[in-house]
Length: 72
Image (cartoon, rainbow, N blue to C red; front, side):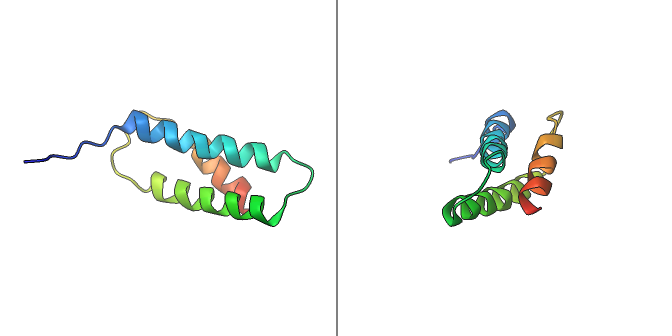
């Protein structure tokens, strides 16, 4: 029998990769359409991630901030 295990630390790390990518792209003076699409995909990813119920003590503030920044 296979039991899946979700490692919140690993999921948080992956989410922070998205946060860092969004922030680095938004720091550029201008964005290509591919970069804009990349931001949108990563914002969607973060929205899915913050809705998960396995978070414990992780600081979701950077995820929320990146979502807001990516949508502005």
